Image (tube, rainbow, N blue to C red; front, top):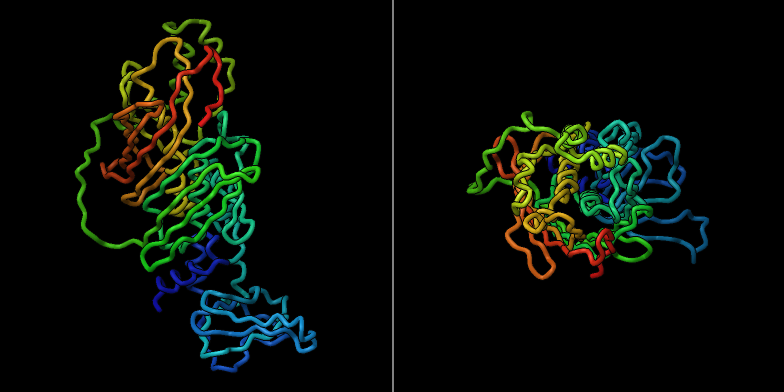
Amino acid sequence: MDREEVTEFLGQVPLLQCLPGSSIRRIAEAVQVKHYESGDYVAREGEPVDGLCIILDGQAEVSAPANTEETNRPDYVLNKYDYFGYGTNSSVHQVNVTAVTKLTCFVLPSQYGHLLQTKTIWNAEETAENHSLLEQILHLEKLEVDIFRGFTLPEAPTFRQVFGGQLIGQALAAASKTVDCLKLVHSLHAIFLIAGDNNMPIIYQVKRERDGTSFATRKVEAKQKGLVIFTLIVSFQKEELGFEHQAAIMPDVPPPEQLLNMEEIRERRLTDPRFPMQYRNSAAKKKFVPWPIEMRFCQDSGSQHKPSLYYWFRARGKLSDDPALHRCVVAYASDLLYSGVSLNPHREKGLKTYSLSLDHSMWFHKPVKADDWLLYVIDSPSAHGGRGFVTGRMFNQQGELVVSLTQEALIRRAKTPGQTPRPKL
């Protein structure tokens, strides 16, 4: 097996899937191959553990120590992708492991055991606090195989309910940590069911729908208070060469370096005499929490009634160099100001509205770097029956179409002026 094949195999081992891709590649360089004949001892009770042993081919049997009562002997068979050993010199085997057939194993020697202990699911050596707030938001706590816990951080911008982009990004992160690191998301389809509570953790449960040579499919359910509030279907693909064309053309807009960010726009409005003093004083008193995404708008306020919006965006701060993380960041950002574009043609003075995302789909066409500038082109071709429909395209600065999106959202006129009731579906 070549190094990429070893990496792909190790990425199928549940114990390793939650590690950063860089760690799995380092483990692939460190593992040794060992062969055993049928009946050979792979491990003996009381002997030191040589390292983490992962079965590549064949079967092994685990048997309890001889002094264990016969009725309590937990004999069972280990198959491909199963593993034993802890990767440290301080432990000894508690059971016997015997080859049932010809057996081939990968062994990670104990001196490389530190590769199994990483700071976060995205970075082996640095904690999330040393990176972008977005990376902290997208860091999940692994509770057990295929079950993760995420949080709405106090430093992050909050809305009336859990931000839809957070649900998409965290659910995608959970799914990404159950596939091998050579497979990356190419499409996702989300359904929003119940508004989430910002003050409660979110449990993400992943179901492995399919694992193939080129593709893998996962279903993720996000839960609070025992209820499913959000579902996500994700398809992953191993990179391959194929036919290529691009008919979509990036709009002719100013580069991000020539545009103002949201903080600069806010400062100008606070000092702009064209805005009423009461508005400026009120806005100045409100606590301003910068979004973890930097945005620079391509259009002026005169175009706010058009069913379209163009803006450049990128993640604030440092991101770890994990391609799966960058796609999760783009998924998080994709819900910012997205469905609201369907309300643009209907905006008028005094109008009070509320909206709630219903479903959201994304297709990743090419590799993407979330800490480089991306142009988000949003259009709303239709609104009807209390639902607004929007489409989106994301281009990199080279004009390549990297992501396509669609979303439908509930959009309603508030029943009482000045009051924004929670939508009922």
